[in-house]
Length: 194
Picture: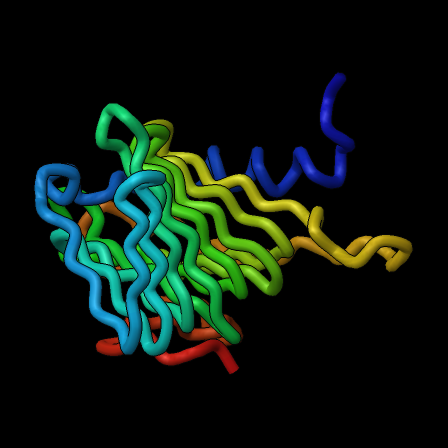
C-alpha cells in the first residue's frame, strides 16, 4: 500500500533537493558519555536510566533531555530514548563543518539501524534547510529525512508537514538565504525550541 500523496510530496522533495547528509562516521567508534543528576543501572536487563539535565555525547553527537533511557542488546548495539519538554540532538556531518540539529518531546536513537526519530513538535535543521512535523526520521545510512504528521492526537485533524528548502548555490557562489526566508543558523548551544 502506498503512502497518501500528501505524505509522499515532502519526502520526495527532501530526497531530491537535499544534499547528502551523512553523520560523522567516526562517531560510531567513540565511547558514549552520559551525565545526569541521577542514574539507575540495571545490569541484568542492560537498561540504564538517566534523570535530570541529561547529556549524552558520542564523538560529535550530542543528545540532551530531562530523561534518557539506554538499552543495550546482546551484540552491544544501543537504543536510547530521550524525553524532555524539548529534547535535542546535534551531530556533525561527515567531511563538512556543518551540523544536523533536531528537536522533539521524544528522541529515539538506534545505533544498529543508524536512525534518529523525533516525535511531537519535531523539527530538524541542516544548514539553512528546516523540516517540521509530528514525526521525523533521519537515517544516516540512506541520507533520507522522512517527515509526516503521524503522532497527532487521536480524533484531532491531521497536522501539516512544513519545510524550508533553500535553492542550491551556483558553482563558485556562496549560499545566501532568500530575502524573505527564515534564517536558520547552527547554535553553539542546544536551547529548547521556542
